[in-house]
Image (tube, rainbow, N blue to C red; front, top):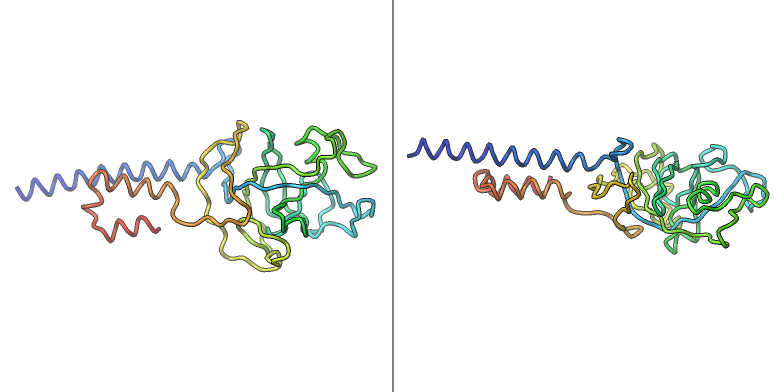
Length: 239
């Protein structure tokens, strides 16, 4: 009886472990954008404005972008992310890449406007036209802000907050962050124009990922939780 019970326990443990590994592998795969194959480091939603600082003074700018990179399509400003951070935005099914090349918005970031896109990218997203004389966007009825979903695929190496954006006034843009955000689970493929789940600006993701919870749940349902013991199950939940 003891030997048969031991074999049965081993079989249940093997089956539950295999199930957990399969679910964990699926969850890990969900962290990757299936369109580009790039790792998703952070995603959320925010209000975006636009700018074009070419050091000409025509748009009120006083110099080149903070990164030293010339003003160009795809160069965005962030109030807190490290310079040269890379990612993309999605607006009404349109997906456009960006990299953080400047700082801003300033005061508007206190009102939740956490991303300043370049005028050419803003024009393409909204169906407008970049005006090289005024450095603004024509054909959109004066619209200056849009609600976008953003995805970060690479953090810059310099100072700045590697997590949900915070206002420029916090000074996070000048502090080195050695604890980047935990990669969230990608619940939906945005390559087909799907919308990303809304995440309020400044909200920091906490707790375990869905994949870990599913894996632990599979172990418990299959009997693996009882066989592994409460302490082992607890470790799985908090890893």
